[in-house]
Length: 398
Image (cartoon, rainbow, N blue to C red; front, side):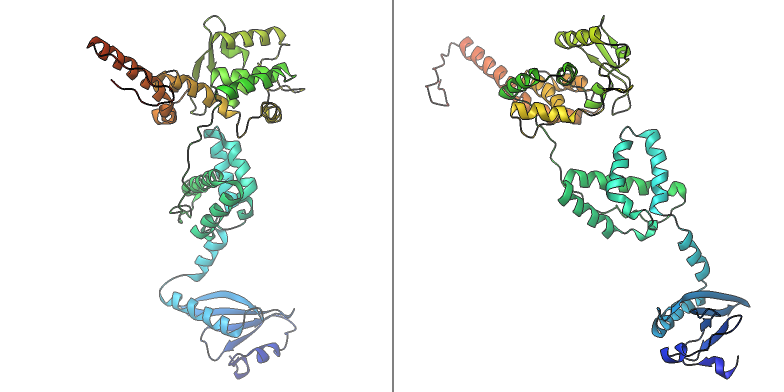
């Protein structure tokens, strides 16, 4: 090392260094041990760390000059030097960071898992495309809790709390499976507070049902009319009604076997007289398609009836009603008619009783009527006469 190659680094001095005709020229900082500036024949200047540890040279590029200042290079050089003194290998650490898995790689792994194990994998793909694709090239460890929290909050404002919570669940589940492909870091979705949700209990009431049937009768497509009616009369999920196949319907026993539901298990749905009549009419009009509701001009089944649903709701004057609310309507009227929740759950194909508990409050009226009948029976049996409830009043007296 010559005197000319070792001096206190300054921006002016480094910019004035000559460009070598061949090879690389190396200059050492007199104020920071291990800090070197290398100059290449094309004029590129790079800060580097160089030090021998146990006779083995350790080299690490710190950054390009003048993008990295002298002071920044000295601070980084000191940090690397301290790490080496503690027995760490900065080259291995940098190589590990460079080779670390990206979010895109995790998504590809999750996509394979979801398609094999989840009925709702297409919804995962939709959420990734809309909300998570900007993270594709980020390292898994670079995504922090604050990133997930910020995205969760933004989606709640733009798309609603329900969508935000579903997205948070997806991120958490993806990171839970990241260990399958070698990621050992933290799950940034842990500790993120989700928004509280109220279970939707919208269903069609008496007057609404009347308007719904009138609007449905005005729908020109017989297939669409039948589709919505069967959705109401069977209480099945929209996707199951869309994929209803003739092979799964037994007219003799009045049963419809759904091969696979949301729970992943088959469900047998009893068919009422009106439902059987609709299916019989559909079968007479069938043109050889295996589907009860074949797709227009395609080989598959009906895919998306949202446009027709919007027309029917507008014609009926219905607000805030979704196709899935037809399923809730059947269950709600069953509960209000006094049908026990286990039977309601069986009709809907629920595998857990708590899923059906949303309809518990709707069963209050039949209970009240039964209690009133028992009260009258007891009092009359005891010879106690009940006074009539005064018109306009809300109480009776004994």
